[in-house]
Every structure is written in structure tokens, then in C-alpha cells.
Image 1 (cartoon, rainbow, N blue to C red):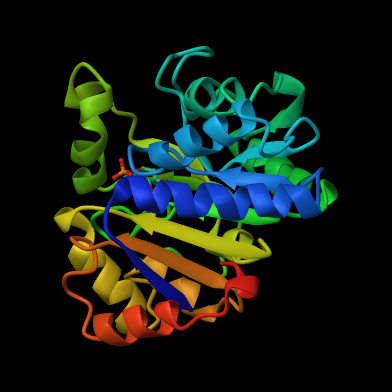
Image 2: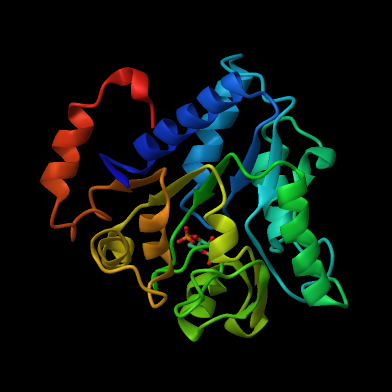
Length: 260
Ligand SMILES: N[C@@H]1[C@@H](O)[C@H](O)[C@@H](COP(=O)(O)O)O[C@@H]1O
């Protein structure tokens, strides 16, 4: 696992956007897994800026969703489908045909989960999966004690996650209890995992994930099992890492050709 400490969220966004642009230059039809929440927004802004200035052609790239609320009406502005279309797909100049996501409105949720898991493999697998992290260490919507081998399935949100996400809704009551999420086993199949965490509120979750034991109790610790996982953190999110100085020195000495 590589840990990169950046000065702030903007720098993290630019670094990851450049890694994505680099991937798309090498593999124009790359399947990019994106995350929702506030943290990845600087990545999408930076990438859209690179696209607008002609720095990369993403017209053949494909975008896929990590997770989704269950039961929000189709087209609800806070469904993750709407969020990803609004914040990622449209700004990159892509159409809905470039986008894949699980169906949070399906009557048969289990079948929708299995269909999405299969669709990801049939699309050739995710090349780069961008992840955020919940304050309880979740990735996607894999809450604590999610099986590290889990596939895409329905999960129940913790009260803490519902409270964290209530800011996107008019009230806490409107935050769904159920979600579909790529499983941890599914996420681990992506070729490159890039987790971005910013702000002091994520410092404990980051320290447990990076330096703690691999444990279902801290789902993001599963990144330790992946052969190519990059954790990008700002100074605040890095503030509880014991090996911060080592991570800084390692990144400073990294040959430029290696990329992220
Ligand atoms: N399902 C999403 C996660 O993918 C995201 O990482 C997390 C953190 O969001 P934020 O970046 O806004 O803190 O929120 C939600 O729970």
C-alpha cells in the first residue's frame, strides 16, 4: 500500500485526476469506478478541467458506480445515479451510455445486485476504483463487519452513516436505511484502488485502515490485501498516522516514472 500525504484536498484531487488521465491515455476505454460524497469532488473538478483544456480525451472511457441507495424514486437528485451523472459523467462530456450502476429502484434487489456484479466483470473489470472512506471506516457502503469476501449486495446503514449523509437530504428521516454496494471482494477485483480522505474527521478511520490490523470491523483495512492500493490523504486526515514521516520520505524519493 502506498500512502501519499498532500497539503490539501485540492492537491489530492489534482494528483488523482492526473493518475486517471494517465490511465486513460494508456487505455482509452478504461472502466473508471467512481465514489460519491464530498471528498472526491476535487478529483472530478480537476479531471474535467484537464479534459476541457485538451489534456486527455476521455470520450471512450466508461464510468461505473460504487453503491446506491435503495428505494429512492428514479431520478431523485440524491440517488447516487443522479449524483454520478451530474458530478462526473456530464462534466466529462460523456453520455449515459458510458455509465453503469446498480438499480436501486428494482423490485428484486438481490437480482439487481447480482446483475451489477456480473456486469462489472463482463465489462472487463474496473481499471481504477476511486474510494472515499466513512468516519466508521466503510468503503462504498460496506459498513463495519462486512465480509471481506462480500459481493455486491444489500446492506443496512449504521446510524452514524445515516447521520453523516443527512446533510444531502432535507432531514435524517429521509436518508434511506438500505443500500446496494459493491462488496469488498468486488472492490478488491479492481486493478488499482485509490482512496482519498481529507479532513480531521477521517484521521481515526485512516489510521485504523492503514496501520491497524486487517479486520471486517474496519472495512477499508481490506485495502491492505490489494497489490496496488494508493491512499491519498491531506495533512489533517494523516494526523494520526504513526508512519507519516516514512510515507512522506518514500513519496519524496519516488521515481517520477512510477506514477501513482
Ligand atoms: N457511500 C459513500 C462512500 O462511498 C463515501 O466514501 C462516504 C464518505 O463521504 P464523504 O466523502 O462525503 O465524507 O460517504 C458515503 O457513505
